[in-house]
Length: 446
Image (cartoon, rainbow, N blue to C red):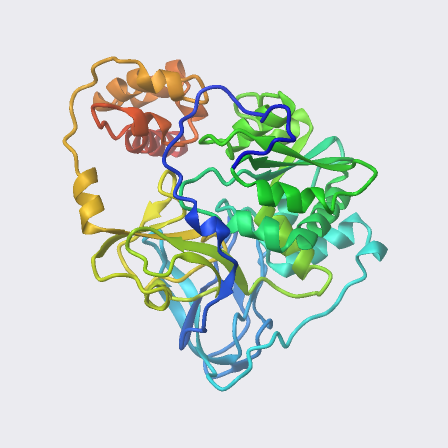
């Protein structure tokens, strides 16, 4: 269903229209049970890992700080459940790395109510105090980027932000957790937007929502302030509408200069999930101990959006939603930009927006032979950054990585996957570009 009351959905040039599989968008959020053991990594954000402040055998209460922030670009970690610290040491993370983690054995008979909170009078806080309070919540970018929220909202004195862009596009197929947050926690979202405006100094905010979510737009419209400082705009349903560059261009008509951040053009961007949790946790003085995420895919019997404690092992999560035995590939995030995992024993973290399970039949369909580039130009017609993926791919095959960056703007690629999606030769272009970037970074740091 499309919205009849918008003149024109805002959009950007190029992009693709994949099959969206948004069936879970109509299902209300549910809460999953607590796993017997939670594995809580000390690094769930960009920046320095937190410093453990508990010991093995110590009882912890739900909401208690179990690891403190190590400097400004760092976040504290809170106990997602009441229980006892069973182990402290390195554990496997979703990215394949071994990271310092705290294992908590959950008390099964406990009510698991949040036991540690310190309510705040937000209106009485100045900007510095507000940013410090935001850091204490432990909120990182919940859209997947995991940039500490307080760092992103810390605007240098010489920078003027005129618009806060709130990303509610959720353009990745299958993912609908942002959609349900906008529908069910609208007040939290608008409260969080006001906090972000105060922290950053932005005088206005605009919420961009794809027009395949009319109920979300209607819910937000019903609660918008009368002074017009916060507005909502429908976006065309198109991938990658929710990328930083594309949504800012669609809503404001501004382009981010190469190598710059949105602040260079007076814009600050945050995801709706991040701001909704900010509006929910900050006034209560609570920490980030759980999140809403989408569990879906053909390998899941009970797809939906679930409230899941941080640290929940994926194996337990998939058992609760009835993952079929034929599920052979698990993706964290969306199918376009998410990553596959090699172990079900890794935990849910703050940046886990979705868990997708695909069966063997789907994998067989996708296991297609790669052919040589036929120079059809399809990749050029969909690239939102107007790059030449075909030429970049040919150079990557010859390992001309430096030339890719110097002459063909490789660094402007944000790895959306549009080129790989439309390539009739099934060339893994995005994977080639990631390798090229990694090699160039290594050479630059040598």
